[in-house]
Length: 604
Image 1 (tube, one colour):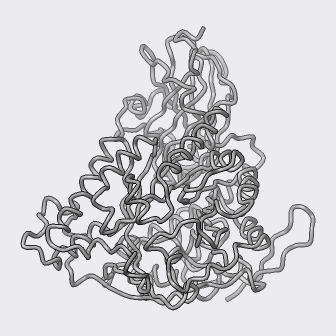
Image 2 (cartoon, one colour):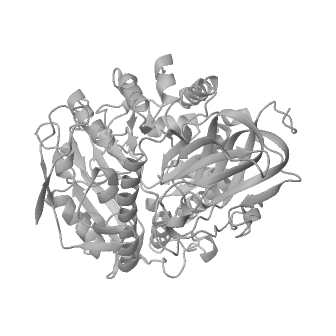
Image 3 (tube, helix red, strand yellow):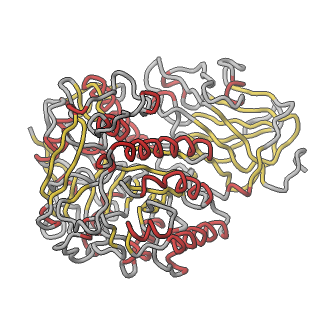
């Protein structure tokens, strides 16, 4: 069954060519309506990767750029870039991921393209080696990113230079400081900085030093990823997979990783571990040949349901034609019957490389199509036969070889995955409708935000928590500083909107310039649109300070008022249609108030 659709051009120009949208019998009912599981829609996409660069200024010893016969080819052309950007604009708070075959910062005029994305209101993120002397204009653009991930495997100059040839940790550090300074000069909070490190048999022994270096640089997150092994890399330069280590060397490497994770917690740096990685190392330990196998207490805290043995490892090699004759070796965990991968990528992620090739994830070797050298559009590709089959395989557990051997996504029960995915897509549909109906509302966004140093926590001593329902649902729980408590609104279902509210009464007038709202990611129990209101006394009407639109992937939201307001009573009112059935309520985890620096406690 097919349906022909076309989007009207709001600018009044000629409408784009109609796209034939295929319908399937694989539909599911959700609390937000029925969804077609196999169908792709532009507003489903959370991240669109646009690989602007083909070339790189480094030659990392494990990268395809170091393959003997690798030809990077040209950078992405302007027409393909603009086509991809227009597709991104159809999304809902879509991230534009400017990471590809090379490094974006080496492309001439890259910052001028990116500035247009930021000015258009798109959230921009990128992985970069940051090993280049930046111009002031480049620094300014980078300081406006939402997320900026720096590729770095060691804080030691010699180790880093050996692995990421031509990289210099001194340049990286200086660039980080310049970017932070540029944002702070505008009184904006700098980007969310991440370190991305590839675990290998050389730098893994220096992970604790890297974690402490990240903390010193003000990095928020450190990501530990597994090594991709290319078959034709020169042996005299290549580093190896961690599981190539033998005996006591492997034990020390594994312990260093666990120690680095623990150190991250203590230093306030979030450690993100590639799914299945610790289990993979634990399984590999049985084949290491050590006389002292890894102790159970050192084993990654895997439960019985996730523990694996070496017989469950799947070792495959894949051809990657655009990278020459070399093949990519991939070690993963086999997916047993009744299970699937916890992967939304075929519905929510696309990657376009500098050649115009489109893939459903960063690591898929086959391409969905080519939007650079053909007239094929992204709207057509997201409903092509290939991606629909990938979606069907993940949804049913009948995985193709590439998804079966993937080492980046967790293994979960098929039934649970089906229920969660259907609800997620249903929520996307509802959010899309809400965004259209609320398009005329003058709402602020929660990003970019003003610099945190401009605010101090408001004094709440002697104050009182308030809420709709006359204090129903224990509103004080939202102010107790505990992450496992929350307020529950008395309103349910559609009655939540415009009626449920959480607030605080200060003993005296307070200057308030920022509120921080923390919510669950459970769609029916959060709000994606809220209004901040204030007044001085119970006999007064509430006045509006600001309406804030909150991205659906955001749990902790920084709501900055356009101008500070002085008042005694404050509240946050539900304004979205998240609650759709009678089991739904609003359940904020916490609400915090902040005053501008320099304003006194009594509001004078």
